[in-house]
Image (cartoon, rainbow, N blue to C red; front, top):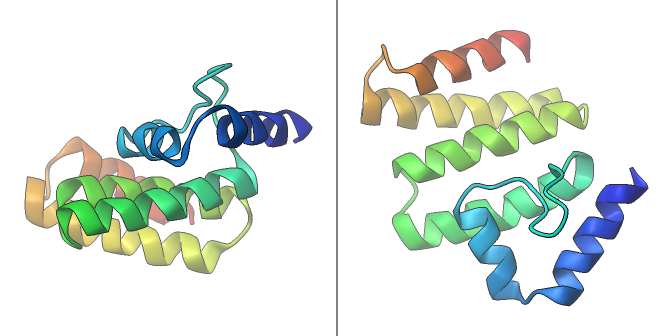
Length: 117
């Protein structure tokens, strides 16, 4: 919606690239100004940037990368891209199962989202 475009523009002009990175490195999908959650293409774009940053910082298989993959998968799903949604959720599930074990609540959430993808 227009609100999210305004929030994204505000974030990009008010903050710096570092501000953007900090927001997403915390895996916070909300606008730092108005606290509304990003949705749609804005969430996908920011999630893609965050995922790249996290992979560079922590490596491809770190638990925080799994969380970012999960969030990005959900964002793709909300945009109607089921293929990208499943791809990201499946990779997130691999990382989460390895890092946390099959009975962890993050694994259950990812499995549930995969079932709905």
